[in-house]
Amino acid sequence: MDNGYDKPGQMTELLKEIRRYAGHYACITAGACEDKELRVLLARIQKLDVSVVNPLLMSFFEDYVGDALSHDDFASMLSTTESYLFRRSVCDVATNSLNKFFSSVIARLNAVRDDGGNIREAYEAILLGEEGTERRMPSDAEFERALRTRDCYAFKRGFYLLTTLENSYHTKDPPDFTGGAFTIEHIMPQNALASGEWHKMFGPDCERAGCMAMS
Image 1 (cartoon, rainbow, N blue to C red):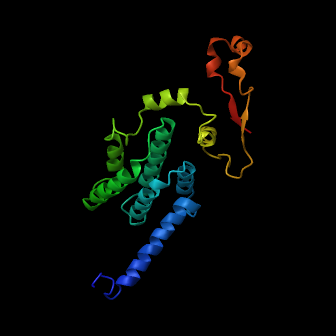
Image 2 (cartoon, one colour):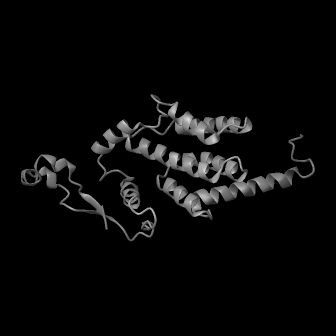
Image 3 (spheres, one colour):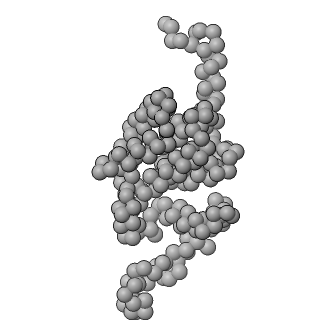
């Protein structure tokens, strides 16, 4: 049966493609990207532990190395993806629809690329166009409401939240939290706000007192 790979050079091209995508995957999951900015962005996305996004990231990489995406647009799309995944996590939006959704995003962005359109703008438009669905990018208002009421102590991405907040104040020389030397510590006793005495001491703003820190 003719499968297209018995033609001269076809198998060689297939192996080259496999090797290229293996390189993309190593950059995404193993920190093999030489560009520091991209490496940091990819590492943060991996900390969110949403592996279903990896095919989409590989598609971004393929467009980047093929000069269909500029460095700045690629970095912007990675940042948007990180925000999309983290907002959904904080807002507890189900992830079971993302596999098919990301597959459709890849197909739509490929069509935009083939038509000579702006891939970054198209990607942002696709995410914003899902407002009101399970595939939505939570709005600032939805995200703020969820963040104010979320039990961050039991939140499995609480470490990511605190380290990202900390690094936002040190953009030029951010601390490295990947070595395992830092842990989440309690400033007050864990059940402090259950005590009437603690409530009285803090006053009406007791719920605004931060109780967790990195050390």
